[in-house]
Image 1 (spheres, rainbow over the protein chains, first blue to last red):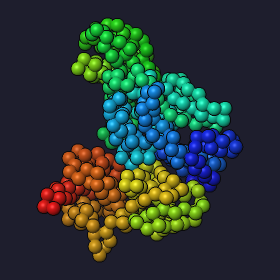
Image 2 (image 1 turned 90 degrees about the vertical axis):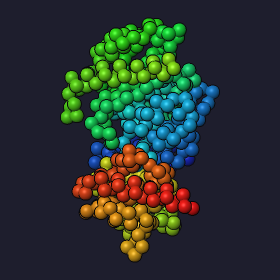
Image 3 (image 1 turned 135 degrees about the vertical axis):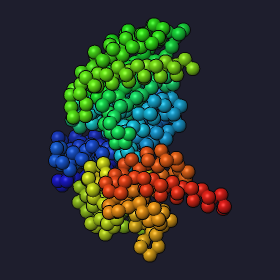
Image 4 (image 1 turned 180 degrees about the vertical axis):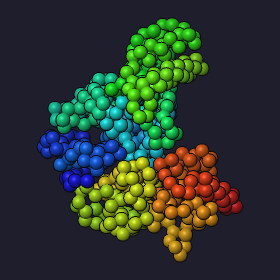
Length: 287
Length: 159
């Protein structure tokens, strides 16, 4: 790696100030599983790395009046081992366990996963399906936005220069909402998703209520399949309806051909995974 | 910058530039060449060490990020005169040919057994999925870990 300076501030405010002072050459460092690789390959450069991993506020999972709060520096392993997550949003554990391998899950963070913002990011679909919001800090203070607005494009987020992601919050209404996650990769370990999908729903008098479908690796960012959701809400679940919704979801995605899979194959996967996650979420809602 | 890390139970200090990875500091500055430089991007696991008891890729952690933390490398288990029981088990099963993956493989197996003394074969495979072997194959590696677990269980029953 090319030489850089290094700071490990103990607060978000100090991190933001350091990033502002140093200007465009400064980068925030989270788990390092993406950024250090990019630095080694010289595909990004940094004059200063501001290491966020010593900021206590960003390293906890806690219940707050708002809901369930994940500091941005929480590791995937922390999520997998959290009783709070197990109780309130177990699908996040199902997603976390599919990321990388043990070593990268111990280093890699939830916030880092979201900020890298690759289309296949495995923590994205469940968070979108559960209406997650994110808090961003900059020199002007903090702002909150829905996760869906945070994702802007491949490797592009709403973060402005010098801003850092502070936390991710699952709103109170989403806690305990039945949710299912599925990922299809080419291997069991260390595989990128060809497609990943999450669905969350409640049942109100036997009718689907507040359904969310989120898909990864099939568009420039993780997306919601809102037309498929609209086709489901207020109706009684049955196999024909679920299959129709899965077909609609496939029309909302824009998968690409690449060396991992063809676009057609991905469309087929979207239909299959959407059916499965919907069925599983509905089954959980029924029981 | 001056960095102090507790490595295999001893405080070790080195003066290194900030871009030094934990792996480079261990190998080049502290002379601990057990952890290997393989892919250098966190895929192969040859550089695995435990930081505060958890396996990580030492190639993907800056030495500065390990400052003040507890690091265990393969040198912290046994040595040629006296192998650790886990190392002996890998030897007994002829789990390695070239041995390049061995330090990382053994470190990951230790992390698993510390947390989950009686793993299933599936749990062993999952725990070792971040460690690639390109010559012996995984069967003898997994068998060694399973045997270690069953002997460990037998010992704790006796105790």
